[in-house]
Length: 319
Image (cartoon, rainbow, N blue to C red; front, side):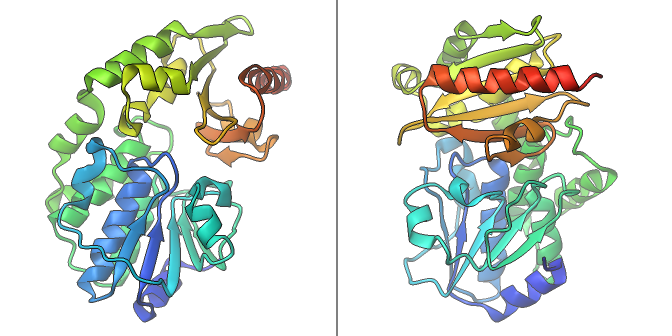
């Protein structure tokens, strides 16, 4: 494990850098990627960003003004990626065993890179990128500030999740002082929905099922639902929070069909319940409040396995 200062030293000496974001990209992985890319390009370095999934309209502003050209990378950096499989195809096949550095805040990180910098106390990986750019003495302009603010505000649920610390607020305030468009970002992330998103929410609501005396709520997202609603990836991001928002629900389960087969299960849990402990049983992980894992089986079998494990967890853990 290396420190933030050592990360900065490594990046200072590097060039021709590829930054990888995780599949099903969210605000933190994209905010981290774009902020780091902008900062390194200010140093005169050649940098590009790759993600296995398309970047939807919601997050495209993060890439405004970033110039990218294809090159053979000398250094590969993964940001906000807790496990190798989360890189997604085709990047997983291309860069397996070739990732030089991982910068991440997930406590379940599997340390798959040659060098890893992990800080589970950070509310978002963007907090770590903020520190790295400061160590590198990067002039943090409004675009970099907006990228970092996006990652922090999305990974904290607009500062309402348990991962928020006093330092999170101080960093956010500093970013606003540097020109981050906080009100516009918050509106885009939380208060603006496409028609396709509304259609997805309607279908997801219709799929809700309750278990264990209504303490567990399950929703599903199938490829057919996505096709019928016309939803893009941006329209799906955040749907996993719906079950946990239901009064009385301790653990929310989202079962999403993958385009390459199998299913991704996302858990959301309210304190003191730990979603990461449950997902770890199936080789996954994440945070106490939000975690995930994958199943290469049918929807019903994946659901049955997860519900059985949640039942054991609830029996063994009392509030």
